[in-house]
Image: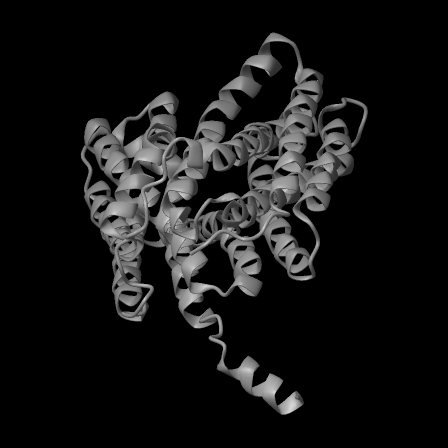
Length: 401
């Protein structure tokens, strides 16, 4: 019996972690482009004569594209295939980035950034759809949770590399280097992706509105979580400078480190899911955001207390995002709906990222920073409540492939 069991186990296909790692790196490189202007923004604004508002639009346009057409992109990726879409997205990102490196004014740079947003959206939807197909059932949650860390890792790498390279060869040189890296990554992905069952156009039924009900509910939870956690990291440098007397350089460095903590949340979800922890139980961890928000914005703490609160919120941002992405295959009617399902989630996350900072700014200016605590509380409680409902749904049998 033991010998037969061993033979049967050895005959089962294993998760191709090497290929998944290449897909993950493709997402990381795309996320580096997402944050490439953060370390060189002042130099770009000075050379091209951009106002702060114009620079803000250049930075946020990529997210705006996702907020507008995420679902549509999911259906397009289903039509043309996740593999082709990933390669096309990386190539488009590289070409648009190269065009931005030679921009002579605001309109040119904004147009290039919009095209780059299309490429970035293709990458962020195609990658998790590929991972769903490549990973075996036992490893799927872990693989998707690790994938969810790509933004934090990409932004961190972009901040560190962009600061050094931008100082050495200028902002145009930095963007040109990143365009070249993205193009190389596209070639690596093209060569490395399997040419067998994972490289095909989807042939199953196109998901209708009813099939997207549960993924849409999951996406709503994601939107709310992003809406009330991302702005915390955006406001952190201002809080450190104005309330606690940090220098601008110190506040920026601390914020970069705290932002990277969100990757820890994603990895934690992967470990816990692999150990069999239910989605509903993991969702309850999101409530740790409530005391963290009080530590950060309560007005009675110290700088260490505020940083502790910000660190916890950053971890929760990564934790809840990874939980949503890992839970998505469990609420799909069919696994081959993953591309469209990821389009729904990507659009919801982009909407939260786009609306959160201005909402927090309005609340802070109209009332005060302490008023952000109940705003965060309401968003997180509703998000966790929806995830608990979704957690009950994930106890049903896994969807068909």
